[in-house]
Image 1 (cartoon, rainbow, N blue to C red):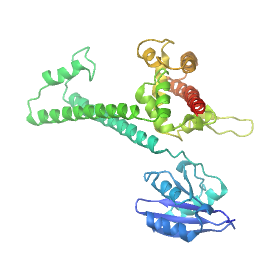
Image 2: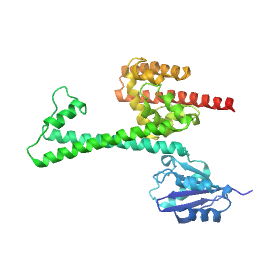
Image 3: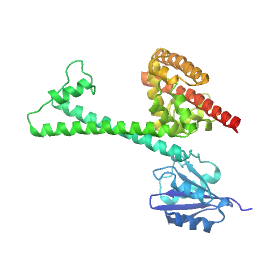
Image 4: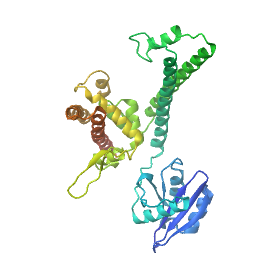
Length: 377
């Protein structure tokens, strides 16, 4: 039986810097190879049988291509969280070779934290959701440019006209004029950019509806169930599923909260206990969604309108969890505000607890699907 050898890769678009941690304790640099499949195949063949190799690299802009290539070659691979790689406080030298060596050594010691690698369906859905998020940010920037241009020129909408409503657009098109031709052209460009951003966002939201309708049953069922929660509509539910994957892969809600970077910072020593704000060392997309949803729980528990429509056809278990969430989170928000917490602090705490209800619904639905598949078999 071959002894396990651990590989650390420092990955770039065109190159891979490789280090090897031997079972005997030695950690050495293997060298730099092109980031190409044929070069990777030759490396694996040179270092030994694939079953005796364990490889890792940091999650980054190159995605999961290297992971899929190594897995296809028979090599076990882990993609690790960059922020959780141990570093020495006094180490001020950073090179590709040193990074690869540090990864190989820490990987052999079991000190690295692997991240979840999405399957093809989840990764495709996540790409589309993030494209929609980028379109939302671009539209916000375009609107800000236009509104600040109007403010600089002293152009203000009539009293009672809210920004970006239909009345606001009517005022833009009919009442806003400038004497200078250059300013008229500037206005035309800014308005055109806002219209373009609106059209792009609508197009991506239609694409999300189309993709979700064709998604696997397991993904579609969890998306529908999560919409039973207040503050979680379709786009938010799709974002959660795309970013998190199967919710049952977390053993408890606290792990999901840590994945979203919503755990508390702590610096305790002896009898002294100090806890600070959230760590933010997690998935920022998931954190943004649940904190935004947390604002919905400032209203008293109720079941009406669109929320009532979204809950139609869902299981009693899911509806019961969603109703419990309304009572619990509304009371929690009021209590925190009564203790003098700022609105942002209170809503962030509510978003953290909301992840617990998201976990409960996701796990319940996934277990129901597994039980149904087992009975059908």
